[in-house]
Amino acid sequence: MTPVWRSLQYVPAHVEKFVSTAHTRGADAIILDLEDSVPPDEKTRARDLLAEAARRVGQAGADVLVRINGDPMLAASDIVAAVGAAVSALVLPKVDSVEDLLALDRLVSQAEADRGMAPGATGFLVLIESARGLLDMANIAKASPRVMALNLGNEDLALDIGMEVDDETLQLPRQQMAIAAAAAGVMPIGLIGAATQYADLEAYRALARRSRRFGFQGSSCIHPSQIAILNEAFSPTEEEVARALRIVEGAKAARAEGRGAFAIDGRMIDTPIERRAERLLERYAAIKSREAALARRRS
Image (cartoon, rainbow, N blue to C red):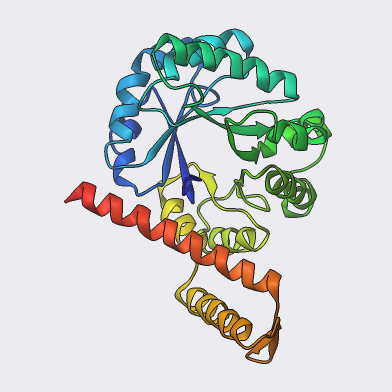
């Protein structure tokens, strides 16, 4: 079943003050980072702390992911430390090709076998961070059943292409990513534009809502103040749910009368619009189911 990942908060795996409070912030998923936020001389300690950190950040029900390092030598050690029952998925940085992905898939399969885990238990959130990766993104997304989601690394991608990071320059690659994810049946994660200034929460909210319109299902974030905004922005509103219910019920009534299309509020409703309404209701049900499960866990 596709998870609900409206908000995915990055937390440095080696920093106690962040690990200790991450479970209280309300994120759907927490990404324990072994890559950019961990200095080279702290990598080993971060790995050593990982198993306990995963247990702690997941104690309130958030899914736990681990971002490994892009360097193959570091990645191999990261995978050995990360693969386990408390970790739902790995975040794979700088995936440039199908071959890159499959090499990591083999390492994860071996780690699962060594721990007696079911094959394929560990999913992948793939980060595309180069022009080469962007051009091969559609193939990468469907290269392994472990792939659950795609995202772009804005800064690394911009550096590789030689472009500035802003809403205008990111829109095309972000749309391409959402299309590749949809074609592969995986989640597009991220925002349609740049979100480097986290202090302007209203601008961030507007960007998140706009991103949902483009098909994105959630986004990673670095600051706790962004979590509630993402959870709200990537959830259907009550008005949207009510309209979707009217569409689904109207479609049933139209079919009973032998009609293939009908009107609601002056707009013709046909099969694609009906299917979009059904998907919205499925998404709403999944979110409510998750919230109910978390409430039971807290009680």
